[in-house]
Image 1 (tube, rainbow, N blue to C red):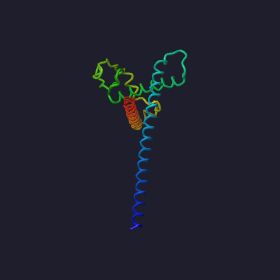
Image 2 (image 1 turned 90 degrees about the vertical axis):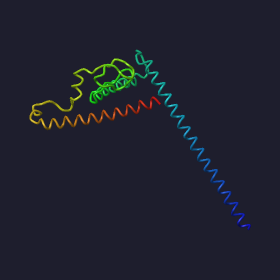
Image 3 (image 1 turned 180 degrees about the vertical axis):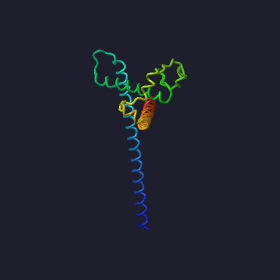
Image 4 (image 1 turned 120 degrees about the vertical axis):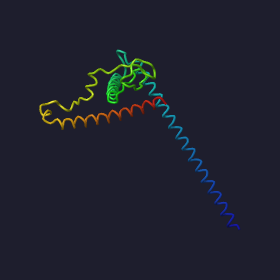
Length: 177
């Protein structure tokens, strides 16, 4: 009987230790998740501070972080151009006020009511021009090959713009939350 009592005590002791270790691991995981959430929250606040600082000082004559602000402006200009090109391919125009995509035929945004800026005819033509394909006399000799190259280029641009649009939408969704 004594052997069974010792065995029972050992089993109870080991199970208590295992239970305590499981509780400790669970608590440690909870603490780590909370730490990660706090770090993410702090990083989000840093981003908001930086964005606010940029908006307040982007027009200053002598501004700190000049190089960074210039890079931000260039990226925003590029993003705006990509949005226009994407909209032209999709047959939409983006509202300057709220960012909603609207059909080219619309004069006003259905979300916020703002007047929509329509793309110019020249803008519609430039979307299909490819800087890498030069117009030459040999292009006239090979119209089928050129047409295939232009078609392929347009497909690649559509894919890139689609991926950029999805990325921007995901970023916009994450910024809103």
